[in-house]
Amino acid sequence: MTTTSTTYARTISHRIDEVAATASSRSAS
Image (tube, rainbow, N blue to C red; front, side, top):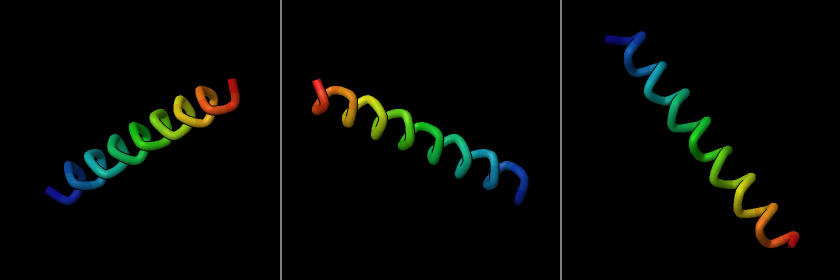
């Protein structure tokens, strides 16, 4: 159960980073 929670949190963090990168590159251009 702990492993699943960690993987889920890591996936969410990665998704947030992706969205943030997309947003910053979009506002830069």
